[in-house]
Length: 321
Image 1: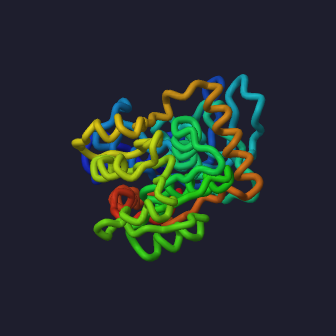
Image 2: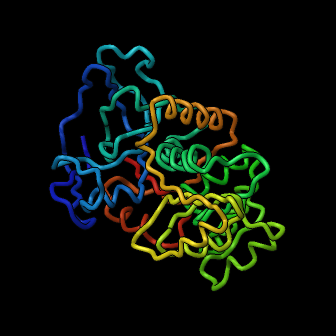
């Protein structure tokens, strides 16, 4: 089969489109014929060798994908050959390939109303958004959440999940196309984060209170201002960051606000089960519907890794084997 192989950590051009042996399932595993692969920023960090996850070389990247089950290892009783599935927790590698072997407890059934491309956009984006909004952010109906970078894969997922929970949403984006997408996903207000002072209007939009919760995709740029505009007793969940930032802790003291980190691998098995069940219900009833922004062939993984780090995010980038 064809797969992307990485023989050394480095820039995107270390990825090679190569022939590798077809996988066979170990006990407790399934082999999936991959229909689509999700591309995430974390894939680029792992590839560059700057992430906590450092796979043994050579390795095949990719933690998100969807497809059909080709074969079952011993002890797998919850799935059958031919089942449509998506990777809910891929562990960071293996999906940039025509086939992948994974533990059965890392995959979930893919509803018939969800395409493989959409299925490849579920695991990391929706898992991250749910963990940030619900588990860490403690969002609840009637509150207001500000979602930075709301036109990207995690951002659109957060808007959809918030809407399904009765949470009011404000989203930011960096292009007119992105702003329109934010509105389409149910945000009451869409703000252009390329404009100076774009958050100055937040007080007016929230009756002078500020958002109860902020989901932050670029903390090194936005965190100080987030602390100024968030509501008293508010929560800021840091989902993304690309450098150091200086803040004044007095803002946190006076408002008694919480600044929360997120790392979904800290979730307990019960927490992951609850998260996956909630996402599954939303997919089945149509309230959660991943937005695909760009599809590329697997052989163009290098281009995808460049694209996923560019500003002006719009939905999910997926690869097709």
